[in-house]
Image (cartoon, rainbow, N blue to C red; front, top):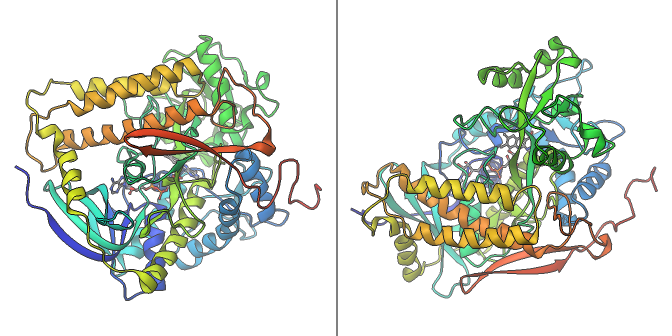
Length: 579
Ligand SMILES: Cc1cc2nc3c(=O)[nH]c(=O)nc-3n(C[C@H](O)[C@H](O)[C@H](O)COP(=O)(O)OP(=O)(O)OC[C@H]3O[C@@H](n4cnc5c(N)ncnc54)[C@H](O)[C@@H]3O)c2cc1C
């Protein structure tokens, strides 16, 4: 039986406890300590999301010889001239501040050089070694320190609480609160808030091989879409070249082996144990993720594969001792799956890793819906067509902090508790209740639908796309959405009903997959992560456009908008020595 709706109030509500959510909480508290702040999260605070999973590290221009201009140019060129330049500029400049904050105020220890300076390592696609790290498991250091600092402050926590709908006012012109489900009891909870941060971290878990944590299912993006917000760059899904491939029956398959392996000089080999990257790109294994993933996919399509259908990474030529010392975490992860990274070969496959696309937002993290802010992987526009390895956690921590400051200022100046529209609230609850309204669950139905989703996204909306495949995918995804609406759940107990949450995960993933397919169909060129076999050229950079997706009368509407070159135009550079 459905329980009654409870209601609570807070000044600031933060959805998600990754780098973006936790930094927002700390900054909001620092800026306005009198405010009540609540972090609501699908998992346990500090234990879920992808910031904790960050391996390689954090890009920031610190060392002599590097500069924020160089970091900016790498970001713009890596993003194939599609990033919003003001957002990218803020990323690279505030990263310098944020890394000091992480070290000096929050207590993170990063690896050091012998002279005491911070060690920065090479990451693909960058012209300078600027990735700050803690061994090869940097995220655990960052998220543990952040979580400790949040625990030590007056910040309320709603753990294992899932946000399911952004609830607007009756007029629809502002956000009033968020409908949540307390996953432990299955009760509905309305959290009314003056300012809300969407920081649920995107997460392309709809692909057959993927890296993000299982709690991420694009809920935030689906909620934003239903609330009428525009999502930009949704066709841009980044595949990480080296996902572990340990067979279909382990969740380790798809998890990432960090970029530093290729940065350090690791080789990729095909099933015939031959290096192949040089024949695709002069930079070989150190080319950007999109190029390497595409080359790997081409080798796989040509049938030059390993026993599990992928390729190999080899590190032994660098010296087993060195590999064990520099990549301890990776060596252990591979050993858990029966592979010897230091001395042998490890099977790998490109794996869906990161969504460059997300909610359109301003540099102060505001959105088109007053009261709603966005930061981290839920936001779009910072990275354009490709995210540089190391720019993801920089993005979430930089913009999380910005959002915290902005929400505190907003609540002080114009924040008020607004009244939610009762009809929207009821409709949102009815949407969640849908699978309980039907009888006769077919055993395994949800699993079959998941297979369909991950298969069609991998085969048709993945690394290499074309018009026919995308059109077919759009049809399959529409049918899948309808099939999900027809799903029934036999277990009607709402408390920790994982099948129910799985169904909601699938609904969010399918809705967002439909947007990815539509945006990919609309972009008739190839940029960064988006490659169209039928339109392999990049098109004129000076006339670059980005896609913007919205729901209009239930249908996905894609428009294209020109990229504003506010700081540098294609063909120009901000680097004085190169000009
Ligand atoms: C394996 C791996 C390695 C990576 N390595 C690097 C790296 O070396 N360098 C780099 O820069 N980037 C890396 N990234 C990317 C980086 O992790 C992300 O860019 C960044 O951390 C995202 O931060 P976030 O705060 O936006 O989201 P996350 O840290 O993912 O947090 C999202 C939060 O939202 C919560 N949530 C989700 N849905 C809901 C809901 N409906 N209701 C409530 N809460 C919800 C989740 O539980 C989680 O707490 C890596 C990613 C992965 C997966």
